[in-house]
Length: 127
Image 1 (cartoon, rainbow, N blue to C red):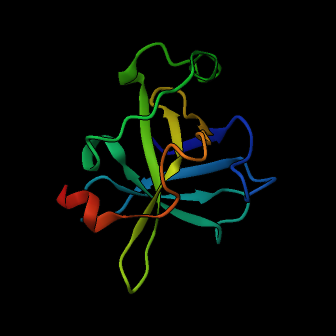
Image 2: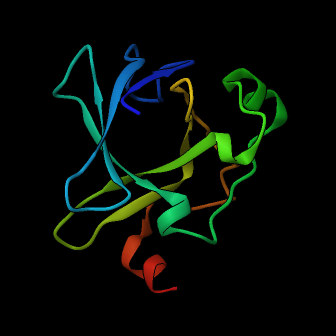
């Protein structure tokens, strides 16, 4: 998959809604999500199914319908990664869900107390 179109721009990236999703060479399950309108706007995302097997936020039925997702395997669940010298963190509060077939996407903001915005990736990987 390469073309991703958000149903609504991700929070903080308005008005950008069209991106490319490309795997990072040598880093299985790590992707760049880059704006097609402004290529300098780029996020790192991680395949949650591959790297965070215990993480499975619920996608409401109405949002799944908006994306055209009928079954769990139709969805790619990504979390945004923030790399730093102190260690990378992932945003578990606002995952990105992508329809694998169409590229339709949304960033789902969960209940504020459901998951952390900055969870240490190393701690999660060791869990």
